[in-house]
Length: 129
Image (cartoon, rainbow, N blue to C red; front, side, top):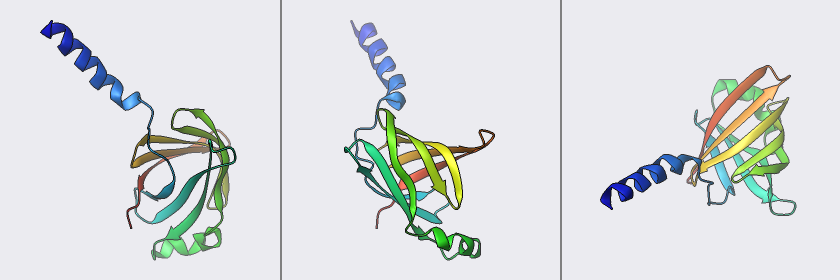
């Protein structure tokens, strides 16, 4: 019996990373570089994801991105699975086909491609004020 319990426990531990995130995506999320923050929230029928660029650090290279502050970066992304939304992203003047995946309560991945060949993935973490 203990052998069975150990096997079941091992399977559960292996499956944890693919279980859907139960936490709400609503909140402010910061890129791993700690120089950009997005406010995300559920919108539309309550299953779609919307967001906007709300903060940039004082780094010199961010000066060029200031025109995009307080502007939408995700408008009604459609759910494509538990904790996962797909659609068009607007990042710093570029339109991307992208996906936002909530990995845990405090971790998301933003992936986007322009022209289906130039792709980038960002790690985002919930910002605690």
